[in-house]
Image (cartoon, rainbow, N blue to C red; front, side, top):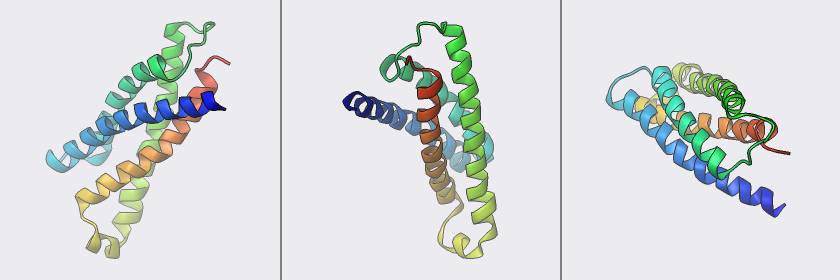
Amino acid sequence: MKNLLNQILRFGVVGLFCFLIDYGITTGFTNQLGVHYLISKLLGFVVSAVVNYILSIKFVFTHKKEMGKGKEFSVFLILSVIGLVINEIVMFICIDGIYGHSADLQEIISDSLIVSLSTVVATGVVMVYNFISRKLFLERK
């Protein structure tokens, strides 16, 4: 149990670092450069996923010896693409679904703030998915 808590803590630290990368790219590209939020999210997610892979393999999960590095990266990539799809769906629901159809929310929350809030929500949802899927598919039993 102590090992699992320690692993969750390391995952959280790596996740926080990668969240800051994703958040900075997503909000910076959208709010400062005017790039559509789904494109910004894609860019932020890809960069943070590569960093997350490197840090997760090094500091969080133990390598499956029966899985070569190429196969390990392929599995990580597939899991990340699924995470990206979840991320984009949550962003779309938050921004175009909920915010876009609520004049009351638009009165109290700015367009740039909703991008920031939606990024946090999407990251939280995908973080749970990432930990469970990577533990199941990438870590040595």
